[in-house]
Length: 116
Length: 114
Image 1: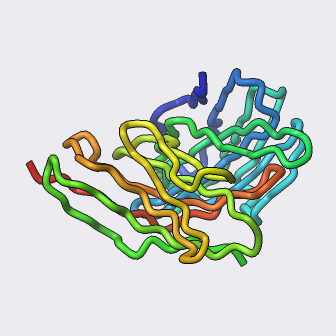
Image 2: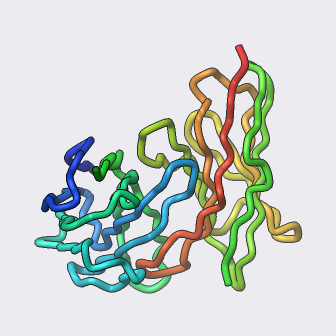
């Protein structure tokens, strides 16, 4: 099973709201990722967690706050977003083996976010 | 620096026709290559991947890809397309180890004519 689930599927929020996106996997993967994808563009990496610790932050604005409560769960907390933050937010996970493990990232279906 | 080029932004083929989507990469070491497919409003689904070994890789949905080191290419092929293959296709280069970002091409949008 290579399933990554994301909730909600769609989200509409105002610029003063606080909301959270949730991602879950039960494949035993120890690396989890957040990507942002604008229309007609490839995904852009935002954050990477390795063994529940933030290992990569691609200079993402602080209005996006990631959290990894345990090895199966990844959250993205949103606060004071701008209309240009409207996008598809994708979560992915990978095994993160030792040595020269071949990491394959498996993606969830995404959350479509609209900021008004 | 790693980079991936998909020269064709949009391709239209007739149902039942053969398909080839091009992907060229630039990577300093042995690449770890992927093809993903994305239907409208959906996430990315892994079609196939290449790390080493046989340079012709079979994937899901009848797709295959061939790694050619001399041409720095990893082209995706299908002998006969179906209307359900209409989607966006992304080629990507991944890290050899560790949790790092995938470097994606710009994508190729595939339209199928009935």
